[in-house]
Amino acid sequence: MALLVSLPGRNLAMPQLLILLSASCLHTGNSAGYTRVNDFGVNQPAVLSGVQGGSIEIPFSFYFPWELAKDPQMSIAWRWKDFHGEFIYNSTLAFLHEHFKGRVIVNWTQGQTSGVLRILNLKENDQARYISRVSLQTTEGMKSWQSVAGTQLIIIHAPSTTVVSPSIIPSAVPTAGLEDTRGQRNPSLLKLGAMVGMVMSKVVVIIPLYGWVIFLWWKQR
Image 1 (tube, rainbow, N blue to C red):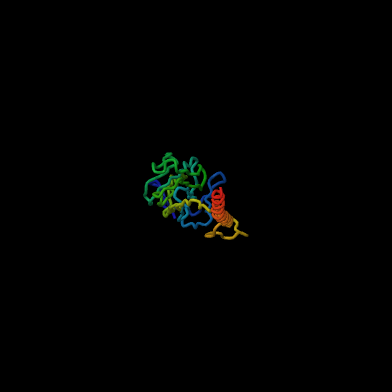
Image 2 (cartoon, rainbow, N blue to C red; image 1 turned 120 degrees about the vertical axis):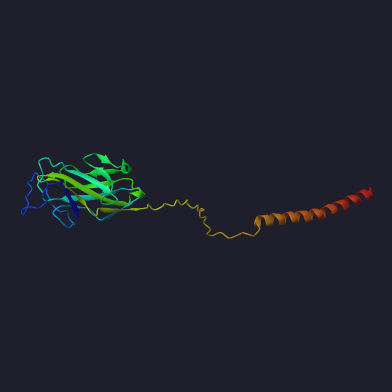
């Protein structure tokens, strides 16, 4: 749906037979997926969503029944927030709203009836309604109209990424064929201890014996 704004003093009555535009003029074709309410209008998607920090493209197209003047002086403008909201872009004045500096690109060239508004690096406060406006010179005077509903842009917060430190997994040690010796003494140590005990017992027996022999020998002398 669109609103028509014409210059004062111009007759808004439509002729019974519409003048067909020649091949050199713009066509008034309707975009697929949209339903025409009037003979003139602007098509935009009703709702779009974008991720914060990402980008979004709002397509638009327009149509009209009038014959263009030799110099159509076509221009595209965009408002935001509401029907009478601030202008954020104007192709004729090369105007760009301060809030969108370096973040808005309008892919549209003179003579086309469709284009795209692209917003980069989406911010949380970009969530609003965006409305495109068309102005052009016809044989019946300057005509201006814009979308009524526009496109509601919804900003989705980017999902928070949780950094998980990698877990340290100890290397697996093969245990096949091995016995659990925890709490048990080393068999080699047990053998060594037994040998030392036997030697000490012999020493304890031999030393007194040798001492007794020496004592008898000394006594005979």
